[in-house]
Length: 270
Image 1 (cartoon, rainbow, N blue to C red):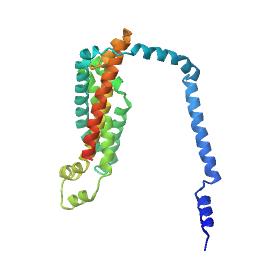
Image 2: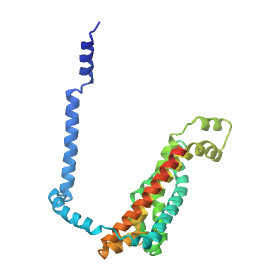
Image 3: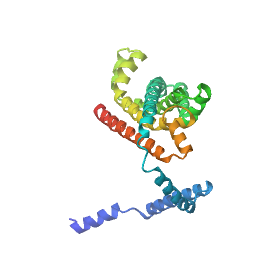
Image 4: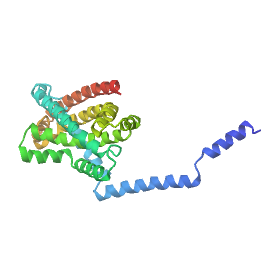
């Protein structure tokens, strides 16, 4: 029989990482540090310049406070426009994502000739930043809310479709096999066997994307895509930093409220 001390000693010896593992961890850590250092060097990052710029950041913060509370009345309607743009953009993007997500899911369509092109389209769309999309649509449709809605729709479409097809691929295949056995066609197979299993996840993705788009819509106005972003550009351009602080505080309050509501809804759904 082993004594308690021997058992403890064996446990420590077996749980302790081997020298080769230690070397592996050390090498990985040094490699990551080297990559960070080389990346910073290539783009001209300097801690010295950062330290020199800190006082200027402090001066900017001093100029931003106290905020211009009277400016809240002026920016209420643009804030509401930002929320409306986010709602419409997220909704259109979510609706468009459903068919492409189904095409990209390998357990729905087993043919690589279908799933690979669908995934390529999704990767292509996600490659284009929302600000670039907004700039393109502003050039096409002019300044206003329409470019912002279309930019957020494209942005939401790429992300929701990606998350959605991954959720589809993880569903229980039992109901699908049972429907196949009784001769259900592909449309009934999807409508009755797939969609009911992924509705909670899809709703969660929609709410998450809406939260993201509220923040994104606040910035799209910088390129003329409507919403509160235009006022960011105006106040910063005229050095009215107290008004900029008012916009930031107002936007933060809206985002926090939406985040709380969204989290409560997701908890009930999931």
